[in-house]
Length: 224
Picture 1 (cartoon, one colour):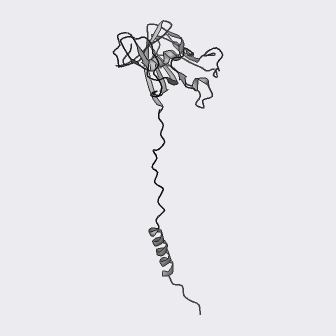
Picture 2 (picture 1 turned 60 degrees about the horizontal axis):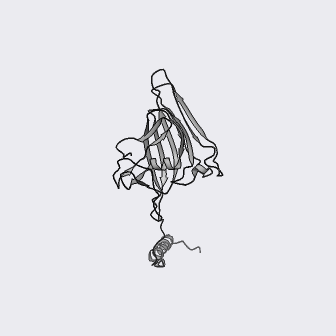
Picture 3 (picture 1 turned 90 degrees about the vertical axis):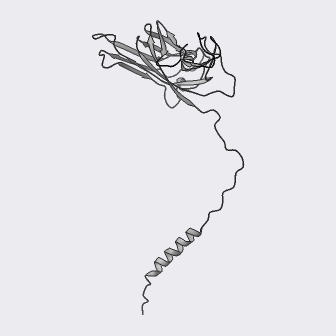
């Protein structure tokens, strides 16, 4: 005679399995008394916007001029220190309208072929744009490769006079520069550019002069 299956047997087994799971307690993790590892100097990002006045902003930009535009701390009326001893430029973007209806405007940004004598050179890259309409400004954006394959992707010392970027930008252009930097609270600060009429302790964005034009920060930011 064939035995009949108990329909409640499966549900009883499931209840037992759930009971075992509920009663299971994993072994406690070892208690770690040591302080956790942490990054002492985090990388900070900063965008600084400027406008070109005086004339065409044309020439070579050096490390020291770019880092001074990023920011310095005044140590006196005319003296300063760089906010950071190491930095890198993530991108430079430019917008330029034509001076009048019927005229045109052209912008161009280029990495230098030879940043300094006897040093590695990055892959050549030039970006340019031209506009003939006031409704559509000329736009160019220069940024290094994201895989760090170029010398221009690397970190630079703020006090170097190495030329990094060649610019050809008309007057009345708007320029955005994206930086990455660290606050160096391990070593000593590096002396920055000479300021004019500064207040000690304030942060300033030092203008960059190239050719007849000068790039000065916009808005209410300090410039000296």
